[in-house]
Image (cartoon, rainbow, N blue to C red; front, side, top):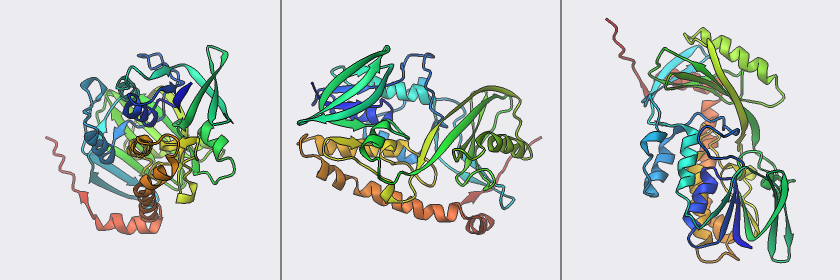
Length: 357
């Protein structure tokens, strides 16, 4: 019998377990092995820590260790608007990391008191009296655990959310696809690509220590492979070379287009991070939302584990307002005409001063 069972050991689940692990008896279920070079579940994520997530790490008193960092550490984004045949450079302050090592580092910060089961698959839950009974499999065997509260931190397409909010409107679902290429041509920028023929969201390029990542958020069942191949062809016209492919991975990605698509659960089941729908609708940045929603739930559970939900709802008001603001921002970003006006003005852009001798 546990106080809390957390499904998902990514940034949201690991943060919650770290913050509450000394106060409550917690079980953390994670499908990955979290062993060096032995995971079969590689998240299709660019591995860039945005300023909002950096701020949360600072508030937590955490500094990213050197083994987690990757070169190059860059300060510019090359924005390519294929729809309007425009390009601009913008200054941005991201931290380039190995995403798997970043997640493992967060997991290592969890107190030893927390019981962690890796390589397991969450199946379902049911309520019995005043308890939540969680069913999962480990090494091919069916297992069961009980707790006062279940927390779904299992990302986009969350199994916990689907059971809790089966009839609630879900955020817009995308498939984030990334292909890694060996590259001997170092880039001095990250890339953001807008092309409505490819996606209603955006695509990206990220250099990482001898590799170049090309990624895109694509609509499921909408000729995903064809559109990703078309993206590669179009990017070659902008000077990119995609020669030696190393690996290809993908994962589901949520995009909340309204606050009604956010689901935080109810009395016995809480949702945090992307499982709740918390992710930027303008940029798909999710780490800051994982940290903030975990902290909001931590504060709600700090004093009363049996009657936390109303306080959790109140704690999330700033995050809900942020989602509303990011959707307003998206209107300008993803409208071809408005984006053209903004980019043509050169507002907030930087002038390239590359000098070759």
